[in-house]
Length: 137
Image 1 (cartoon, rainbow, N blue to C red):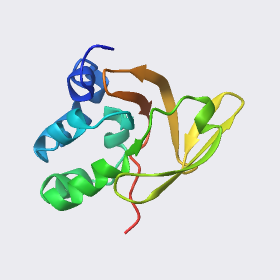
Image 2: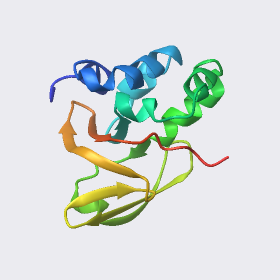
Image 3: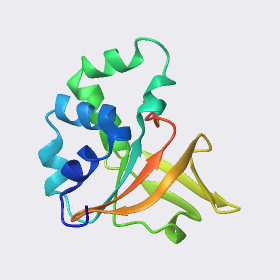
């Protein structure tokens, strides 16, 4: 994975198939793959299953909203777990994610938990998360 661009690397993780499909649906893969030194907080499939019925379909049907959602899961810089101990991160979508670490568990916005940290790809660091982060309006 360390030699692959981020979307190709995430495509190899079955638990991220919904997130990768959303990236492809939005024609946003090139944006992810040409970005340098980013951190992606990637919701696992179960995170999308927790959404209210119809929410994912609504996002998938509106490219602008979908790009905003995807951009909210990306921050500039390769964040280490130590960087996420107590941080406010500006997302590509220009929102803010609050990261905290308590007893070794990283949470984002008090709602998402990192289930697998610090996956290195050629251009990004990926963190698998258990909840889709809903961008502020």
